[in-house]
Image (cartoon, rainbow, N blue to C red; front, top):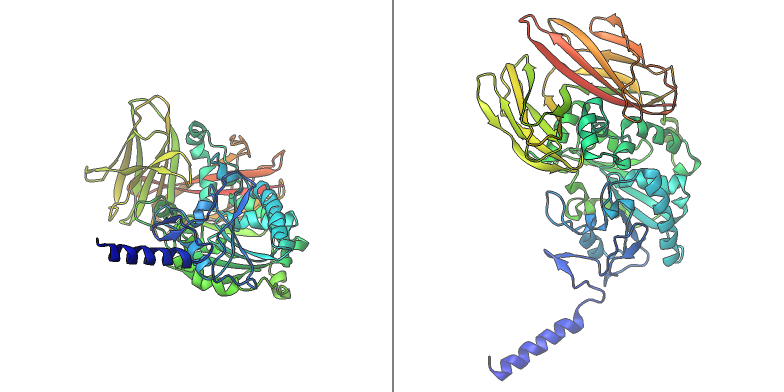
Length: 520
């Protein structure tokens, strides 16, 4: 390169440096911005760069991530959809951004909403002082929604915040959390050392208790809530797809949370999007332009009397299931077989969670064909730390399908979850929160030829099976009612019901429904 061209190149390069917008981060990943400084210590917070088009009339945005998340949830890699550009979109729109670290950021598991909420409330007070008392708005993903509500309502941080937008938040819990604390998951949970307060807090029963204490609180109406939901179950064979298949009986869902659970009765539901799963619902390119108009102000309007009147507690929750669930120990080098009878041609998903990643897992079709599982993949959703094996045949023919498992070491266990697209489902009506000795339920089984029998397993808050017998009464054909056993201490109890149908051809099919309930 001659000297004239070299001088021209240097001049252009210097101009670029001089006129680069003030505050723009030089740390760019895949074309997306990253904050200038990070800390991953729980209880600490930090600012994003101040954009060149910063408008001080716009409230700062505080991002609150979900279970097991950290600040990188908003600008780092997503699980399935590449880099999250949420921070970039907020920066480009002229917003000052703030990132917080809850206890989950330490990487030692997730905490419940009260513990995280108390910590978040302290940070919000400090953030408010930094902005001279200016109110902020919050964007919260997944469990970040309940964590935020705990901070605002139970720990007084409502005074620092105007509006809250929740993205796929399990406001009424997730049936997947119930599954992870069910009787059949016990062996596997014990091997994995499962003691995750965050997952425990998302059981339907525990969230019913939280909703009762939260929705009746005087601080509840001091902030404005907006919600969005997704109804896409994520990429094929992903943990989201399998979670979505299980949740399918409970309604439309994003792979982890049902659309119904994503909505607050007194909130404004902005939209439900069939392209959004629980992972990309937090991506800026997917949602920011649609939620941004609600972030321009921190003003809070009064909640209408209609919304107030529609809030109910201790009401029955309707659950449905067309799944077969089982689990237990796996013996070293011995073949364990579990037969799943499919009474009519259907579609479905069969998943096996194990403690080890070298377990042999196969599926034997009725015609003798042996299928290899997809996986193993590490699961961070239902049973963190487990290995996930998946079968998703295009069609499940009528007949007996057999899951064959062989452990490679002496300490292994499994949880088998199969979900079917069947017309007939088990239906359960039971409150999310009730008083000891007064917790009744109604169970309906599908109408079909053959005889039906029920068996119940009832776990206490510590995971121990209670020996009290549940004897339901038959009210109509296929309809049963009973009360849960009287218990001696309050907490979340988990009920697992197996419905066995003996068909006219002599074959037996099993279907399972799992539900938690908080008993006062």
